[in-house]
Image 1 (cartoon, rainbow, N blue to C red):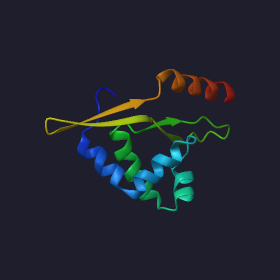
Image 2 (tube, rainbow, N blue to C red):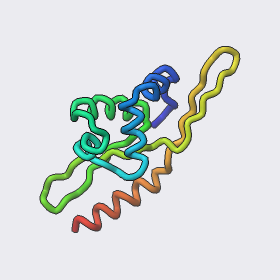
Image 3 (tube, rainbow, N blue to C red):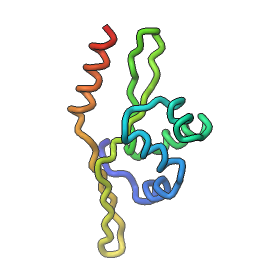
Length: 116
């Protein structure tokens, strides 16, 4: 993600119980939308709407999970290691620290290797 998300978007997402539930669930392990729907007890359409918003802010990332059956679902994983909110001279600043891309590339390599 090139720049930090807007404070308004982040505050709105963190105020939404569904978005918070999805963010918490994906912080444990990468999950498909169907898994999230079942685990968080919400409709798939709600899951996808919230995941889109979370992705737009850089709080979750999607990647494709390779599977032997040829169906390669997207899995979602929280990318937020730390969220800092500062108030300076009447202006909010949100800084988002995400996990390193090295971890993401390592996961992709493992998925590729397991798919062979």
